[in-house]
Structure formats: C-alpha cells, structure tokens
Amino acid sequence: MSDTTTRIRNTHGASSKLRNASEVHIGHMLLALADTLERRTGELLAANARDVGQMESGSPRLDRLMLNEDRIGHIARAIRKVASLPDPGGRILEKRTLANGLELEKISVPLGVVGAVYESRPNVTFDIAALCLRSRNACVLKGSTEANETNQAAVRLIREVLKENDLPENAVTLLSPERETVSQLFTATKYVDVLIPRGSDNLIRFVRANSLVPVIETGAGVCHIYVEKDANLDKAVDIVVNAKVSRPSVCNAMDAILIDRPVAQAFLEKLSPLFNRYLVTLYADAESYGLLGDYPDLKAATPADFGREFLSLQCAIRVVKGIDEALEHIATYSTKHSEAIISENSAQCEQFLREVDAAAVYSNASTRFTDGEEFGLGAEIGISTQKLHARGPFALEKLVTEKWILRGHGQVR
Image 1: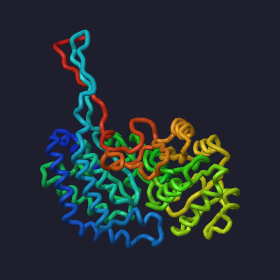
Image 2: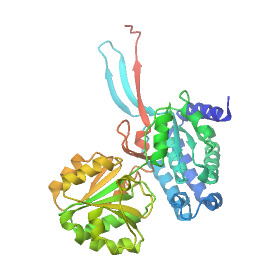
Image 3: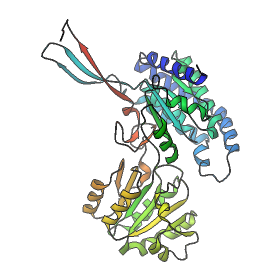
Image 4: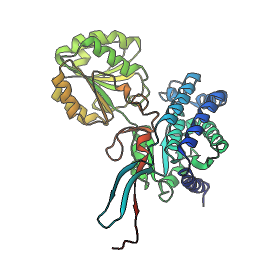
C-alpha cells in the first residue's frame, strides 16, 4: 500500500473518532487554533516567503498566494467565527412513529471525509480544516506545488493543536503536491466521501472528468455586471469599479460589463478615468471600442474574451440592445457563479433576478459579496456553481448529510 493511500486510510479512521467529540470540545480546539496561529504568525510568514520567492513576478496568482500579518489575522478571526457557529450535525430533521410502531428519526450527520484539491491560496487550508473540524468531518488536502511550504507549515500547526486538545491529528492530512497523488485520491472511494476542487476552470474540469469519488464543483467565476438603461450611472460606476479592482484575483471579481446602448457613452465617460487610474486593460466589442477610442490600454475583444475568468486587472465590455440581449449573453458565457444588474427600474431588476441562472444574483450591488463570511456563514470551502447538495458559498451548514435512525421493539416485515 502506498504512503498516500495509507495516509488517506488513516484520515478515514480519524473521522469516526472525530464524530464522538463534543461540540464544546471542538469549539475549544478551534479557539486554540486561532490563538496559536496569531502567536506563531512568524513561522507561517517565513514559509510563505519561500513560496512567494519561487513564483514569477507579475503572476496573477501571486496575490492569492501571498500572506501578511493582516491576512493571517483575518484567518484567525474567521476560525473564531466558525467556532461560534451552531453545530450543523445532530439536528433532528424529522421524527415520527410508523404504523407498525417503529420509531423513526432523520438526523443530520457529518459527510465523513472531505477531500479538497485547490490552487495557490494557503488561507484555503485553514478555511477547509476549520469548517470540516467544526462539523466533525476529517479532511484530506491536496494543495499546489507553489504553496507547498505554506501549506505544510499550516497543517503542521493544525495537527499540533489537534493533538494538544486530545483530538486525532490525522483528522487533517496534507498530501504531497505532486500530480501522482491525485490519481490515488481520485480512486479512494472507500475512504473519501466527497471531493471538492477549488481553483481554475481547468482544475475543476480535470477533477470532474477523472474522479471516481463524488465531486462538488466550486470556484471558477466568469461574472457579469449589466448596466441597464435606467441605471443611476454614478452608482453603477462605483459598483463596477469595486467589482473589478478591489481584489481582481478572486472568483467573485467582475470579468465583463454589459451596457445598454442608450447610456453606453455617458457611462464609459464616467468609468474610463477610474479604470485608467487602476491600469485596467479593456477588451471591447466593436461598438464600445469606438466609444473608448482614446483609452490607453484598449484591445478588440474576441468571443473567447467574453468567456475568460481574468483574475487580474482586465475586463471585457460589450454594448447590448436591452435586457433580452444581456440575458442571452450571460446565458452563453456565465459559469453560474455571480451576476448583477444595475438599474432603478424594479421590473427589470426582478426579471433579471428571476431569469439569470447562477448561484448568486444581485441587483444594485457588487458581485464581490459572494463569500461565506459576507453571507454570515463563517469561512467557506468555495463557491459551489452546481445544483446538487450545495449552491453558492459551500460553508458549514452544507458539510452534513442525512441519516435515518429507527428504533424498534422486535418488528419484522
């Protein structure tokens, strides 16, 4: 048996022990983890500096990889938030007595072992571990090579805190970042209950196509903002700028702007100076290209540009004839993550909210709010863009399944 398979099997064994831990015990352990993380920030920063030093400067993944004291403080606060959330397991979902006298209950229980494959972002290591432990799930983590030093330091710290709090350290396992381990994780159907990829569209497609373990998709976002003809243009500019530049490397950042023709010129005149200040590259359709003629970093858009998740200070723009054309464009190019309309016309907003098929749909707000913490769910494993089991922020409440309990008195069928 390979070392990878042994480690996955050990994690499966730890999951049964974790199910017996009390809610108070788990909560105390997570608070200790947050305290330890803050106390040992230097260790994590040193490991992260080694990873950052290996990455090509200018890479759009650099911002995702990099940690600093503020980001580590944010991670610690998120762990404390998760510790304070109600336990999603052990809830009685249904209770009744059948005609034959069997006493039936349906309860929420942990999934068991959650596998995660993700790229670049070391904060995800803490997010997944904290959420899984809070819901009494064990987890097997497969991070990327470029974040390996940071991930190793993070999991070493987590396992130390588990051991210090009399919980099984194998409840959190980090696999080698080499691709060879992936095939063993994909076929570990006896030991891993669900696999969650978080990262690029290519990663998600690869996991979905190759894993024998059930997959819940998260991550890739091609997000649109539609500026409707009745929009307050000052409000629209503020929202669009926030959605693009506040943190362009994340999945809820805006990738394309759709603008109604009657307001296109006025809107772009207001938007252009701000986008230029932030050095945003624009990929424009023919009509918006003509309106943006003197914009410094302007490129003619191809159809492929409208399906790109840029993860950087780049953005596609298209002028549309109205809401029907905007809806058609979104249906063609959306990854069903987050979509928004800006309009003072409530009927148009409600039509957009009804008809757009996405995990999160907004009127008059930035797509950047699609986040487990912003939704009051604590941290998240990712944003689920599928429809089975979980959709939107995949957080604590979705890390459970159902179990039927029946108590009898000698009944036979």
